[in-house]
Structure formats: C-alpha cells, structure tokens
Image (cartoon, rainbow, N blue to C red; front, side, top):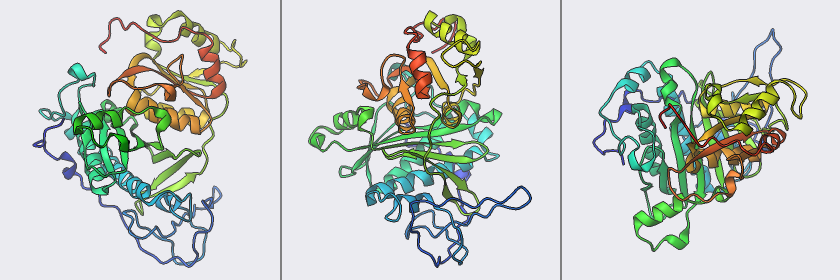
Length: 405
C-alpha cells in the first residue's frame, strides 16, 4: 500500500476544465451523431450538446438546433445506450480522473515530479511481482483512488501500484482494476502513455468474508465476467476507448469544454493488418515458432502475400491503439504483462472490436487469475493475424537472459 503520508503531487497541477453551460433547443434523439467536418479550406464545426445534469463534464451546444456531437455522459445515459445510473456515475468519475492525469502528463511539472524519489506505494515490486513504482505512477494512482472513493460506487480497487487490493466501501456495487499510468518511463521523452481499467460487479456472495479476503477474491475474477473495460491514451489527443460488452467506442477529449466527445461509435479492427509490434531486439531470445512467424510475415511469405512492417512504441496502450485502428498484432511474448489489470481489460476491448486476445495458446478472458500481479505473455490483434500466429505453436518466450524482469 502506498503511505498515507505521501505528498499529493497531483495538487501541483490542478485540473481546471473550461466549462460552458448552454441550453440546447434540440434534445438528443439518436445514440450518436457524426460531426460535420469541413473541407480542407474550411474549419470543422463541432458543438457539444448539453451534458446530463449533475455531470462533472457539463458542456452545451451554442443555443441553436445545429449539428452537435455527443459527450461521453450523454452517450451512456437514457438517450444513448442507457446504462444503469450507478455505472454512469462511476464512468463519470473515472473520466474525470483521467482528465486530471492527462493534465499532469502534459504539464511542465511532469518531468520534475517524475524525478522525485522517496515516495513509496508498497515497495519496489518484491514478492508481489509488481514493477518498482515511479512518482507519476503513484500520483495517478492517488487521483484514481480519490475519484473512485468520491463516486460512492466502488467496493474495491485493485491497482498495479498497490501490493493488495484497497477496500473502499461495503455497499459499492462495482470492482475496479487498473494500471493507472502505463508507460510512465516514457514521460521524459514525450512518448504516449495511458490508463487501463476494468469494471466488475461486486460478488455479493463474498460479503460475509473478512475484508482482506473478499477484496482479493473480488479482484481475481475471470476476464469473462467484466462488464466494462477501457483505456485512455495520452498522446497528441487524449482518447478514451471503452466497451460495455456491445462493441468498442472511442471518445476524444475536447480541451475547450472539458468533454470527451464520441468520435468512433463502433471500432472494428480489420480482420488482417500488415503491421506487427514487438521488441525486435529480443529476437534471438524468442522461441523457434515466434521467430519463424516474424521471418515469414515480414518477407511476405505468410497467408497474406504482402510484407509486414514493424511498428513498436514500447507503450502498451499506444501500440494497442494503433493495432485497433490499422490491424495486425501487438505482442509481448515474455511473462511480463499483468493478467488482472492489463491483459483482461485490453483483451475485452479487442474482442468487442472483432479481434482476439491470447497468451499465445489460450484465450485471455478464459484464464482464471490466481494472483493480483500475475504475469503472462500477451498477444492482441486482428483475428486472422492471431490465428496465423498461434498456428506456429511455440510463440511464448520462457527465458529472459541478460535483462531485468
């Protein structure tokens, strides 16, 4: 656990969105609207409609009956996909936390925060199997935990930054698992980072167990029981990709209003891409099957008769986002990525977009976690690419010579 005395670094860069409140003459009557984009010589017109009352992301249209776009909270509400009120409240607090993280990541203070030491969140991995936490990881973790507490809807949060799950309230209907800031080591180089989260229902049948035990068991649910999952990419744009079990949607942060705006109501990963994403420097440590697969596709001798290209950012959220857009495979063949709060949520998103998540042999969402920080290989991508990759059999890297875990 992180120390309660840890300095709240996130207070150095408070998030102050520019809220505007207008009255819209036209109620939202469709789940989403496509923004009217101007020609090259013109300017884009994107006017957010009014948000649902009480949202922390309240914004509005410009008072006419124009072609407004749809905010995240509107999309989740009764005029959109009509989620339960409790889940809408929870998503509202998660997206607000991610806006705060986005502001810190993009701020001039992020480098100085990242260099600070002496802040702990339960130690540097040790027996739990976690990576050593970095200050920006801890800041992001505090922001998310604070938002989940304020939502009043979360019983337990399980995070990469804590050795054990954090019990919040007894009657919270949901469980949240999260990697608060994936790729934080890339901050100084301005390489994209991201937040990953998954949401489960609280297991009410465990309510009479001791707090520590029920917190652990609630957090170790199979990915097949996820009711929602998402990631936020902090890059040239701040993009929230989310799924509630009926497709995958993307929302882009409009910094002028503080709203996430629906920009892709149905992400469909191409059935096959022409890109693979992996750390090629470890080629000689790979098993024979994986080397054969990579050699084959980059020569254009696989099932798809075109040569594949390599694209590797070394930021899981960024590499996956590109794969969702263009197809192909993003992978880490080592026992390195975490099942509970990385592999499960991202596999849920990929499957809802028409792709597949695998450990090289098994469907990720079929695996039963046994430890909070359990590691495994991870392969995510287009359905046809994943089928071809797995056909090579031996693709999991079991040895890791010359590198730290």
